[in-house]
Image (cartoon, rainbow, N blue to C red; front, side):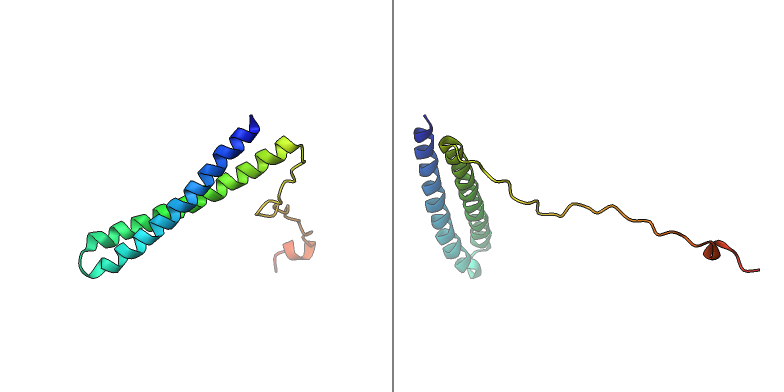
Length: 104
């Protein structure tokens, strides 16, 4: 069961990389035609965006595939540290009585 899932995800990973490379080549060729037609430039920018999304998809597939493989093998996964540090509670400084008195 899990081996078949790994094969399917592996094919999806290869497909994402091939698609990203193809879209990157099309984007470069389309952006070079900026001087002739402006719609080619817009299409090239959209191809570049789609290639970026394919690369993000490939990294997410790789991450989930790695986690599923670790679960199938019984390897304990470590949680990564949070990106933002935990907030520190503000500390109060004691107010001196002399600071509270108003000058006469």
